[in-house]
Image (cartoon, rainbow, N blue to C red; front, side, top):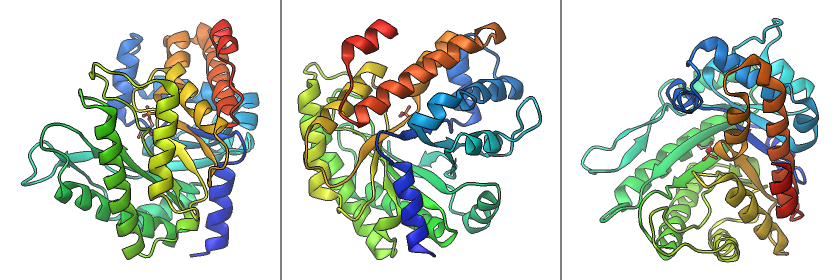
Length: 341
Ligand code: 13P
Protein backbone atom coordinates (compact mmCIF):
# COMPACT_ATOMS: atom_id res chain seq x y z
CA UNK A 1 0.00 0.00 0.00
CA UNK A 2 1.25 3.48 -0.90
CA UNK A 3 -0.44 5.71 1.65
CA UNK A 4 0.65 8.97 -0.01
CA UNK A 5 -1.07 7.89 -3.23
CA UNK A 6 -4.24 6.83 -1.39
CA UNK A 7 -4.28 10.13 0.47
CA UNK A 8 -3.85 12.03 -2.79
CA UNK A 9 -6.82 10.23 -4.39
CA UNK A 10 -8.96 10.82 -1.29
CA UNK A 11 -8.12 14.52 -1.27
CA UNK A 12 -9.04 14.83 -4.94
CA UNK A 13 -12.38 13.17 -4.17
CA UNK A 14 -13.18 15.99 -1.75
CA UNK A 15 -11.50 18.90 -3.61
CA UNK A 16 -13.15 22.22 -2.67
CA UNK A 17 -16.82 22.20 -3.68
CA UNK A 18 -16.55 19.00 -5.67
CA UNK A 19 -18.44 15.84 -4.76
CA UNK A 20 -19.26 12.35 -5.93
CA UNK A 21 -21.99 11.12 -8.24
CA UNK A 22 -23.28 7.81 -6.87
CA UNK A 23 -24.35 6.10 -10.11
CA UNK A 24 -23.81 2.60 -8.74
CA UNK A 25 -27.40 1.37 -8.61
CA UNK A 26 -27.56 -2.38 -9.12
CA UNK A 27 -29.73 -3.69 -11.96
CA UNK A 28 -32.68 -4.07 -9.61
CA UNK A 29 -32.42 -0.62 -8.07
CA UNK A 30 -32.06 1.22 -11.39
CA UNK A 31 -35.05 -0.83 -12.56
CA UNK A 32 -37.13 0.74 -9.78
CA UNK A 33 -35.97 4.23 -10.78
CA UNK A 34 -36.74 3.54 -14.44
CA UNK A 35 -40.17 2.12 -13.59
CA UNK A 36 -41.04 5.48 -12.04
CA UNK A 37 -40.40 7.16 -15.40
CA UNK A 38 -41.94 4.35 -17.48
CA UNK A 39 -38.62 3.34 -18.98
CA UNK A 40 -37.78 -0.31 -19.66
CA UNK A 41 -34.77 -1.54 -17.68
CA UNK A 42 -32.63 -2.61 -20.65
CA UNK A 43 -28.86 -2.55 -20.87
CA UNK A 44 -29.10 0.03 -23.66
CA UNK A 45 -31.29 2.37 -21.58
CA UNK A 46 -29.00 2.04 -18.59
CA UNK A 47 -26.04 2.92 -20.81
CA UNK A 48 -27.75 5.84 -22.56
CA UNK A 49 -28.86 7.26 -19.26
CA UNK A 50 -25.47 7.07 -17.59
CA UNK A 51 -23.69 8.15 -20.74
CA UNK A 52 -25.55 11.46 -20.89
CA UNK A 53 -24.69 12.26 -17.29
CA UNK A 54 -21.01 11.45 -17.82
CA UNK A 55 -21.04 13.56 -21.02
CA UNK A 56 -22.38 16.61 -19.21
CA UNK A 57 -18.82 17.76 -19.52
CA UNK A 58 -18.90 21.18 -17.91
CA UNK A 59 -20.62 19.89 -14.74
CA UNK A 60 -18.38 16.83 -14.61
CA UNK A 61 -15.24 18.97 -14.94
CA UNK A 62 -16.17 21.64 -12.45
CA UNK A 63 -18.44 20.04 -9.89
CA UNK A 64 -18.00 16.27 -9.83
CA UNK A 65 -14.79 14.77 -8.46
CA UNK A 66 -15.65 11.14 -9.10
CA UNK A 67 -18.35 8.68 -10.11
CA UNK A 68 -19.27 5.47 -8.29
CA UNK A 69 -19.91 2.82 -10.92
CA UNK A 70 -21.40 -0.64 -10.87
CA UNK A 71 -19.87 -3.82 -12.31
CA UNK A 72 -21.84 -3.49 -15.55
CA UNK A 73 -21.05 0.20 -16.01
CA UNK A 74 -17.30 -0.02 -15.41
CA UNK A 75 -17.09 -2.46 -18.35
CA UNK A 76 -19.64 -0.69 -20.55
CA UNK A 77 -19.02 1.12 -23.81
CA UNK A 78 -20.75 4.30 -24.96
CA UNK A 79 -22.63 4.42 -28.26
CA UNK A 80 -19.47 5.50 -30.10
CA UNK A 81 -17.47 2.58 -28.69
CA UNK A 82 -15.42 4.49 -26.10
CA UNK A 83 -15.63 3.16 -22.57
CA UNK A 84 -17.75 5.01 -20.02
CA UNK A 85 -14.65 5.01 -17.82
CA UNK A 86 -12.70 6.94 -20.47
CA UNK A 87 -15.50 9.55 -20.70
CA UNK A 88 -15.34 10.09 -16.95
CA UNK A 89 -11.55 10.32 -17.00
CA UNK A 90 -11.60 12.74 -19.96
CA UNK A 91 -13.74 15.07 -17.81
CA UNK A 92 -11.07 14.92 -15.11
CA UNK A 93 -13.21 12.89 -12.71
CA UNK A 94 -12.14 9.71 -10.94
CA UNK A 95 -13.89 6.39 -11.62
CA UNK A 96 -14.89 4.36 -8.56
CA UNK A 97 -16.67 1.04 -8.07
CA UNK A 98 -19.28 -0.37 -5.73
CA UNK A 99 -17.97 -3.74 -4.60
CA UNK A 100 -20.44 -4.95 -2.02
CA UNK A 101 -22.92 -7.57 -3.16
CA UNK A 102 -25.88 -6.12 -1.30
CA UNK A 103 -27.40 -7.29 1.95
CA UNK A 104 -28.86 -10.48 3.31
CA UNK A 105 -30.59 -11.37 6.59
CA UNK A 106 -28.11 -11.71 9.46
CA UNK A 107 -28.72 -15.08 11.13
CA UNK A 108 -30.08 -14.95 14.69
CA UNK A 109 -30.74 -11.20 14.34
CA UNK A 110 -34.36 -10.81 13.23
CA UNK A 111 -34.92 -7.71 11.12
CA UNK A 112 -31.21 -6.96 10.69
CA UNK A 113 -29.00 -7.15 7.62
CA UNK A 114 -25.39 -7.98 6.86
CA UNK A 115 -23.58 -6.73 3.77
CA UNK A 116 -21.95 -9.47 1.71
CA UNK A 117 -19.26 -9.56 -0.96
CA UNK A 118 -15.94 -10.34 0.77
CA UNK A 119 -15.36 -13.65 -1.02
CA UNK A 120 -12.95 -13.16 -3.92
CA UNK A 121 -12.72 -9.46 -3.19
CA UNK A 122 -8.90 -9.31 -3.44
CA UNK A 123 -9.08 -10.63 -7.02
CA UNK A 124 -11.99 -8.35 -7.89
CA UNK A 125 -10.08 -5.33 -6.60
CA UNK A 126 -7.11 -6.26 -8.80
CA UNK A 127 -9.38 -6.40 -11.84
CA UNK A 128 -11.25 -3.20 -11.01
CA UNK A 129 -7.95 -1.38 -10.57
CA UNK A 130 -6.96 -2.49 -14.08
CA UNK A 131 -10.31 -1.22 -15.36
CA UNK A 132 -9.54 2.22 -13.90
CA UNK A 133 -11.18 2.26 -10.45
CA UNK A 134 -9.24 4.34 -7.92
CA UNK A 135 -11.80 4.27 -5.14
CA UNK A 136 -14.52 1.87 -4.01
CA UNK A 137 -17.70 1.80 -2.01
CA UNK A 138 -19.18 -0.67 0.46
CA UNK A 139 -22.47 0.12 2.19
CA UNK A 140 -23.59 -1.26 5.53
CA UNK A 141 -27.27 -0.87 6.35
CA UNK A 142 -28.41 -0.22 9.90
CA UNK A 143 -32.15 0.01 10.45
CA UNK A 144 -33.77 1.66 13.46
CA UNK A 145 -36.92 -0.01 14.80
CA UNK A 146 -38.12 -1.28 18.18
CA UNK A 147 -35.34 -3.49 19.61
CA UNK A 148 -32.86 -2.83 16.80
CA UNK A 149 -30.13 -2.20 15.92
CA UNK A 150 -28.27 -4.68 18.12
CA UNK A 151 -24.61 -4.63 19.05
CA UNK A 152 -24.12 -7.93 17.22
CA UNK A 153 -25.45 -6.67 13.91
CA UNK A 154 -23.56 -3.38 14.06
CA UNK A 155 -20.29 -5.13 14.89
CA UNK A 156 -20.73 -7.83 12.23
CA UNK A 157 -21.19 -5.06 9.67
CA UNK A 158 -18.26 -3.08 11.06
CA UNK A 159 -15.97 -6.13 10.78
CA UNK A 160 -17.01 -6.75 7.17
CA UNK A 161 -16.46 -3.05 6.39
CA UNK A 162 -13.01 -3.15 7.96
CA UNK A 163 -11.98 -6.21 5.92
CA UNK A 164 -13.23 -4.56 2.73
CA UNK A 165 -11.38 -1.34 3.54
CA UNK A 166 -8.08 -3.09 4.23
CA UNK A 167 -8.36 -5.11 1.00
CA UNK A 168 -9.12 -1.91 -0.94
CA UNK A 169 -6.06 -0.15 0.44
CA UNK A 170 -3.89 -3.18 -0.31
CA UNK A 171 -5.00 -2.82 -3.96
CA UNK A 172 -4.24 0.91 -4.09
CA UNK A 173 -7.93 1.79 -4.00
CA UNK A 174 -9.45 4.30 -1.57
CA UNK A 175 -12.34 2.71 0.34
CA UNK A 176 -15.47 4.75 0.92
CA UNK A 177 -16.72 3.60 4.32
CA UNK A 178 -20.50 3.90 4.25
CA UNK A 179 -22.38 2.97 7.41
CA UNK A 180 -25.92 4.03 6.52
CA UNK A 181 -28.32 4.42 9.43
CA UNK A 182 -31.63 4.44 7.58
CA UNK A 183 -34.03 7.36 7.91
CA UNK A 184 -37.10 5.13 7.33
CA UNK A 185 -39.29 4.69 10.37
CA UNK A 186 -40.86 6.95 12.96
CA UNK A 187 -37.87 7.38 15.30
CA UNK A 188 -36.87 10.78 16.64
CA UNK A 189 -33.76 12.73 15.71
CA UNK A 190 -32.44 11.92 19.21
CA UNK A 191 -32.56 8.22 18.38
CA UNK A 192 -30.83 8.80 15.03
CA UNK A 193 -28.08 10.71 16.84
CA UNK A 194 -27.67 8.00 19.48
CA UNK A 195 -27.54 5.12 17.00
CA UNK A 196 -25.26 6.90 14.51
CA UNK A 197 -22.81 7.82 17.29
CA UNK A 198 -22.66 4.20 18.44
CA UNK A 199 -22.30 2.94 14.86
CA UNK A 200 -19.42 5.31 14.07
CA UNK A 201 -17.61 4.41 17.29
CA UNK A 202 -17.80 0.71 16.53
CA UNK A 203 -16.89 1.14 12.86
CA UNK A 204 -13.77 3.20 13.64
CA UNK A 205 -12.83 0.65 16.32
CA UNK A 206 -12.95 -2.20 13.79
CA UNK A 207 -11.12 -0.12 11.17
CA UNK A 208 -8.32 0.39 13.69
CA UNK A 209 -8.13 -3.32 14.52
CA UNK A 210 -7.96 -4.14 10.78
CA UNK A 211 -5.08 -1.62 10.42
CA UNK A 212 -6.91 0.56 7.94
CA UNK A 213 -5.02 3.84 7.41
CA UNK A 214 -7.51 6.62 8.06
CA UNK A 215 -5.61 9.02 5.77
CA UNK A 216 -6.65 6.75 2.90
CA UNK A 217 -10.42 6.50 3.38
CA UNK A 218 -13.48 8.66 2.78
CA UNK A 219 -16.39 8.45 5.23
CA UNK A 220 -19.86 8.39 3.69
CA UNK A 221 -22.34 8.83 6.53
CA UNK A 222 -26.01 9.58 6.87
CA UNK A 223 -26.96 12.94 8.29
CA UNK A 224 -28.63 13.17 11.69
CA UNK A 225 -32.29 13.59 10.74
CA UNK A 226 -35.71 12.73 12.12
CA UNK A 227 -37.16 9.42 10.92
CA UNK A 228 -39.29 9.99 7.81
CA UNK A 229 -42.47 9.03 9.63
CA UNK A 230 -41.68 10.91 12.86
CA UNK A 231 -44.32 13.53 13.66
CA UNK A 232 -41.66 16.01 14.78
CA UNK A 233 -39.33 16.93 11.89
CA UNK A 234 -36.09 18.74 12.75
CA UNK A 235 -35.25 21.88 10.81
CA UNK A 236 -32.22 22.51 8.61
CA UNK A 237 -30.05 24.18 11.27
CA UNK A 238 -30.71 21.44 13.82
CA UNK A 239 -29.80 18.73 11.32
CA UNK A 240 -26.56 20.54 10.49
CA UNK A 241 -25.56 21.09 14.11
CA UNK A 242 -26.40 17.58 15.26
CA UNK A 243 -24.65 15.97 12.31
CA UNK A 244 -21.49 17.96 13.02
CA UNK A 245 -21.69 17.14 16.71
CA UNK A 246 -21.79 13.41 16.00
CA UNK A 247 -19.02 13.60 13.42
CA UNK A 248 -16.74 15.62 15.69
CA UNK A 249 -17.27 13.13 18.50
CA UNK A 250 -16.59 10.07 16.39
CA UNK A 251 -14.51 10.82 13.29
CA UNK A 252 -10.75 11.39 13.61
CA UNK A 253 -9.34 14.47 11.89
CA UNK A 254 -6.99 12.16 9.97
CA UNK A 255 -9.92 11.21 7.69
CA UNK A 256 -9.37 13.33 4.53
CA UNK A 257 -13.03 14.01 3.89
CA UNK A 258 -16.68 13.27 4.48
CA UNK A 259 -19.11 12.79 1.59
CA UNK A 260 -22.72 12.36 2.67
CA UNK A 261 -25.33 10.05 1.22
CA UNK A 262 -28.76 11.56 0.59
CA UNK A 263 -30.64 8.53 1.88
CA UNK A 264 -34.10 9.45 0.62
CA UNK A 265 -34.07 13.16 1.50
CA UNK A 266 -35.58 15.46 -1.11
CA UNK A 267 -33.14 17.16 -3.49
CA UNK A 268 -33.59 20.49 -1.77
CA UNK A 269 -33.26 19.09 1.76
CA UNK A 270 -30.05 17.26 0.88
CA UNK A 271 -28.58 20.44 -0.60
CA UNK A 272 -29.84 22.71 2.21
CA UNK A 273 -28.39 20.46 4.93
CA UNK A 274 -25.00 20.29 3.23
CA UNK A 275 -24.96 24.05 2.79
CA UNK A 276 -25.88 24.68 6.45
CA UNK A 277 -23.05 22.43 7.65
CA UNK A 278 -20.55 24.22 5.47
CA UNK A 279 -21.66 27.62 6.77
CA UNK A 280 -20.48 26.49 10.20
CA UNK A 281 -16.74 27.20 10.39
CA UNK A 282 -13.95 25.17 11.93
CA UNK A 283 -14.80 21.67 10.72
CA UNK A 284 -11.73 19.41 10.63
CA UNK A 285 -12.62 17.82 7.28
CA UNK A 286 -14.08 18.93 3.92
CA UNK A 287 -17.80 18.10 3.88
CA UNK A 288 -19.31 17.26 0.52
CA UNK A 289 -21.86 15.12 -1.27
CA UNK A 290 -21.90 11.58 -2.59
CA UNK A 291 -25.49 11.62 -3.69
CA UNK A 292 -27.43 9.11 -5.71
CA UNK A 293 -31.09 10.05 -5.62
CA UNK A 294 -30.55 13.73 -4.73
CA UNK A 295 -28.42 14.21 -7.88
CA UNK A 296 -30.33 11.94 -10.21
CA UNK A 297 -34.04 12.30 -9.47
CA UNK A 298 -34.28 15.55 -11.49
CA UNK A 299 -32.36 14.35 -14.57
CA UNK A 300 -34.27 11.05 -14.57
CA UNK A 301 -37.56 12.91 -14.61
CA UNK A 302 -36.43 15.37 -17.29
CA UNK A 303 -35.11 12.56 -19.52
CA UNK A 304 -38.01 10.16 -19.05
CA UNK A 305 -36.26 7.51 -21.16
CA UNK A 306 -36.61 9.54 -24.40
CA UNK A 307 -33.65 10.41 -26.60
CA UNK A 308 -35.19 13.76 -27.53
CA UNK A 309 -35.03 14.70 -23.83
CA UNK A 310 -31.33 14.03 -23.34
CA UNK A 311 -30.53 17.75 -23.42
CA UNK A 312 -33.14 18.46 -20.73
CA UNK A 313 -31.72 15.58 -18.66
CA UNK A 314 -28.21 16.98 -18.98
CA UNK A 315 -29.40 20.44 -17.91
CA UNK A 316 -31.19 19.05 -14.88
CA UNK A 317 -28.10 17.07 -13.88
CA UNK A 318 -25.83 20.09 -14.36
CA UNK A 319 -28.14 22.18 -12.23
CA UNK A 320 -28.15 19.78 -9.27
CA UNK A 321 -24.38 19.31 -9.55
CA UNK A 322 -23.88 23.10 -9.42
CA UNK A 323 -26.29 23.53 -6.49
CA UNK A 324 -24.51 20.85 -4.47
CA UNK A 325 -21.12 22.30 -5.40
CA UNK A 326 -22.30 25.63 -4.01
CA UNK A 327 -23.59 23.86 -0.89
CA UNK A 328 -20.25 22.14 -0.36
CA UNK A 329 -18.75 25.63 -0.27
CA UNK A 330 -21.51 26.96 2.03
CA UNK A 331 -22.65 29.34 -0.73
CA UNK A 332 -25.94 27.86 -1.88
CA UNK A 333 -28.80 30.19 -2.70
CA UNK A 334 -32.20 28.58 -2.19
CA UNK A 335 -34.24 31.00 -4.29
CA UNK A 336 -31.78 30.69 -7.19
CA UNK A 337 -32.08 26.90 -6.93
CA UNK A 338 -35.87 26.93 -7.01
CA UNK A 339 -36.10 29.53 -9.77
CA UNK A 340 -33.78 27.56 -12.06
CA UNK A 341 -35.49 24.25 -11.32
P1 13P B 1 -28.48 8.08 -2.02
O1 13P B 1 -27.84 9.45 -2.09
O2 13P B 1 -29.63 7.92 -2.98
O3 13P B 1 -28.75 7.63 -0.63
O4 13P B 1 -27.41 7.09 -2.62
C1 13P B 1 -26.12 7.20 -2.21
C2 13P B 1 -25.55 5.86 -2.10
O5 13P B 1 -24.52 5.59 -2.67
C3 13P B 1 -26.23 4.89 -1.26
O6 13P B 1 -25.45 3.79 -1.06
